Length: 160
Image (cartoon, rainbow, N blue to C red; front, side, top):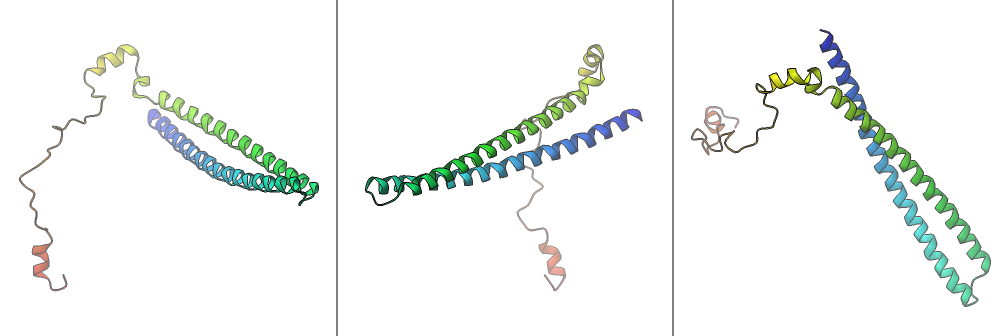
């Protein structure tokens, strides 16, 4: 009974952590999308900067416009840096949660409930690997037919 309660507790904890891990990964993806948007906005500003520089070279645009766009580029770069830091923080949280999941997996491993000697005695009676050979499941049988099994029934009722 005690083992069952411990297993339920571990299962509940593992489930909650796995949901939290997935949420962190989704959050990271969302923030990466926002980062791409910020970088594209910076690229637009850099293109504007290049046009202004050409205009200044031809004496068509005042220097104040270049100063303004440089200020906006610097502000956008600060936003990008902040978003990168936020993504790193999310990655660290996700890595921490993943580490907890690995720890729970190791603690709940079947082998962890036995000593090495006990497990060696049980091992010869256990099949611990996945069976995936082609002879495990019958590939073809003679009992299948190509006809639709619903047809005989439909002939008996009017609404088919």
